[in-house]
Image (cartoon, rainbow, N blue to C red; front, side, top):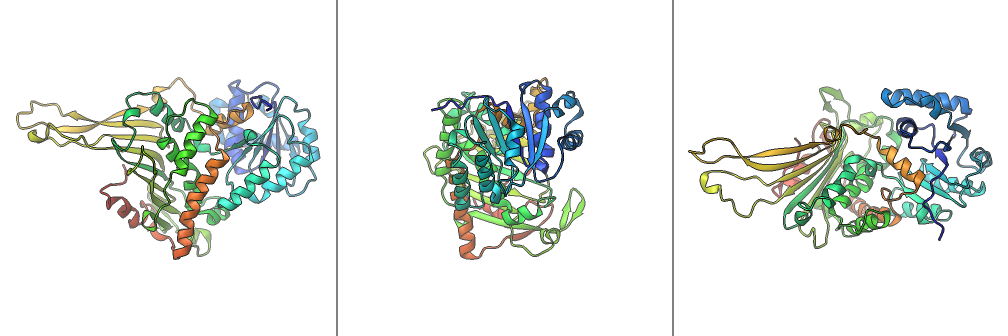
Amino acid sequence: MQDRKFTADRLLLFGATGDLSQRMLLPSLCALHNDGLLASDLKIVGTARSEMSTAEYRNFAREALEKYLTPNRRGGMADFLNRLSYVPVDATTPEGYDQLAEEIGDYSDGLAIFLSTAPSLFEATIGGLEHAGLTEGKVRIGLEKPLGTDLKSSEEINDAVAKAFDESRIFRIDHYLGKETVQNLLALRFANIMLEPVWNSNYIEHVQITVAETVGLESRVAYYDDSGALRDMVQNHMLQLLALVAMEPPTSFDATAVRDEKVKVLRALRHASGEEVVTGQYCAGAVSGQSVPGYDEELGKDSDTETFVAIKAHVDNWRWRGVPFYLRTGKRLPKRVTEIVVQFRCVPHSIFEGRGARTHPNRLVIGIQPQENIQLTMMAKVPGLGREGIRLRPVPLDIAMPDAFSDKVRRIAYERLLLDLIEGDQTLFVRRDEVEAQWDWIDAIRDRWDEHGMTPKTYSAGTWGPSAAIALTERDGVTWHDE
């Protein structure tokens, strides 16, 4: 089998004029260039439907970098812009792909393709690349979500890509996996002996995963109304976070070993019952003191699309039997936060109870955004003589990642993912069987909604979702971590 561990000297960006390219891809590539992490001979070719010359595209890229890349990381911007060229291509027709191939030139040392386009264009784009001979030899492709809207459409997309690329050359992107704290979750679990022995149902009571947004639709009106919170956030980001929390220790930190363990977790997910899923849609309210309209008003029409989902999930294996995983995501919530909360069980017997002291279970909070930090809450004695009894209080042990590594540059998640795509490391990318296991679980939820005619409950913007979401946990004696 051909060795895929080549470093590409050509990078082809589809959707090169889109929002993702402006906000993330171009700033990430420029930052990598400035840090000397891109080979000097790497040529970057952008393509999209927009008609513009290479000179015009370089000006477009400069404006994006000045807007979205922090000034201290723009040092070599002029040299970076000289790497860029541009060829307009209508992805729906084979015309234009030959000119694209001509611009790319000799890619015998390797070509990496970043494909960010509508799912309906995947098959036509792959056909155009094949037509131009841009799928043979040392070529790998990165696929940006959405990869379908259900299992069937996902399989169709994967089948179309698989006609031209084997699995070892396909890099499915979930940008959450490029975040520093998400990867730190693996280091926390597998590089610290004190945690792994208690990382199971004997010591952990439940796990919460929250991805909360304060924003509404913004510029994603058409996409979001067709997708909804379940498919937009739970199917990819949240299930990947769950898999990283629940996976068994891989034999090594390489792509196959890590992804083998993740897919075992996803296949062990029990299908959620109707009582274990709450769905909601925001109505008018206030976020951060500002009045905001409801979803239907923002959309301009009535809609049954959910903007909030809360799920009680179960991983049916030995390690996690009986431990609920509470997932929650939504728009127009009180604050922007992505975090994982691991709630440990109470001590089996408190020796301090007779002295009036009350113990609280330990809690591990892994903050992913907007702040990257790890906090472990431990019980400690309140200073004092204790003549009238002992007092205990939970004390947080904080590791603020930016402070702990103040000498290190904080990177955009796409910096790591683009570099891994160029160099051929699949560890932080999603394999086909993972994607399909995720869709299988999501489709079962949506099928139940359709079967029972379930529609989202309303919640006021600026609140933590419908009251049913609170009841979902409180009937188990659990409270959402809203601090």
